[in-house]
Length: 259
Image (tube, rainbow, N blue to C red; front, side, top):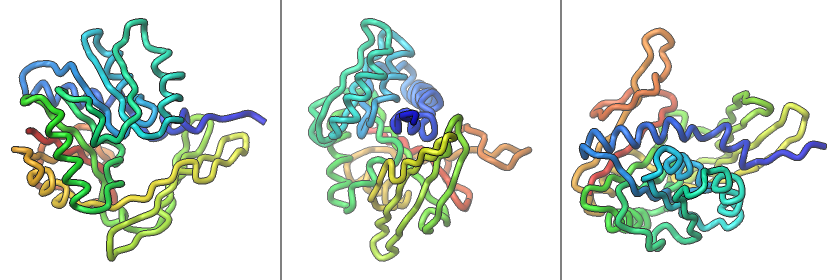
């Protein structure tokens, strides 16, 4: 039976690093008036986003931080090895709060990874550590999700090339907003990978995140909301700073914080 790679399937179904780096690059340039060069990807997993960053420009440098040795090794074997010789990507096995990687133009916390911090103190401490690792002209980029279906127990499927991606919100506790989520895969040749990835985290609201960033010492925090395509009624992939969002069943946005 064919052996499938869950990390590759994750990258093919969850991440669109090209669009993510497009947003980071253009937003940093719009805010600071110059190009960012030094990027740190926290909770990096395979480091695919950091790899995309260094592939864009030989002047770019990136550090990919995670505690999971297995997934870091996968990134080194499958992403770092594919980059052109001399690409400046460094993998670091460390707690993101204590990585020692500082003087960054950009720090990323994407795929809602920072939701694993369950209380305000832990989250604020992480944000403080990020602020201290940024240059004075640095920018912290995060994403977040929500909507009235975000707190539901549900299962959603999406067809991908060669497999089906299945997102499950298995449990949600409204008393503390903690939830158990899973990613499952089912390949077109019938192989099932149940609970290929497991996430136990807190569903943080946008006001909570913004307040904690300000408490951590960031001077400005903006939410970038996705526009709507007039014909389809779906998101148009263009994110702009906004004060008012739409009360959708499910949404994803970016948060941009300045030290």
